[in-house]
Image 1: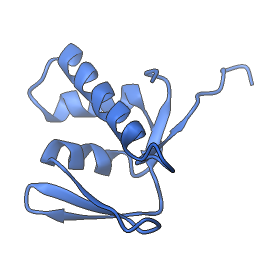
Image 2 (image 1 turned 45 degrees about the horizontal axis):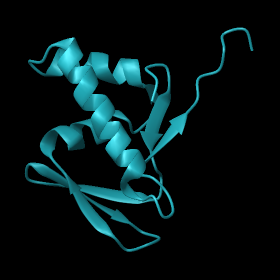
Image 3 (image 1 turned 90 degrees about the vertical axis):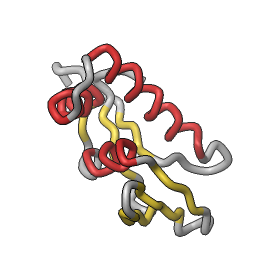
Image 4 (image 1 turned 30 degrees about the vertical axis):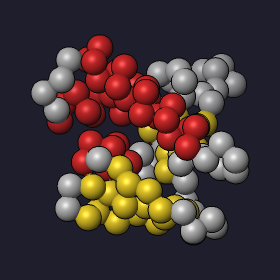
Length: 102
């Protein structure tokens, strides 16, 4: 995953806040899963497509964390989301950035 990649939620996932966690359901498979409070915050921040770098900037402004730690943990989280449904779809969409000249 590159910092210039755009990520966004998959539109066919239903999510709800349940206390400190976000509970999600894949409506196509019927599978449920949950995210921690920080994972839920990331999920909310990618409702619309955002670059990974923009996401990290937002997180470092909201949390008491240095950029390097935030970047490492955010990339790990996004990679985990991409690998969650390896049999079918992923938790999020990654849109490759277009070169500026196109």
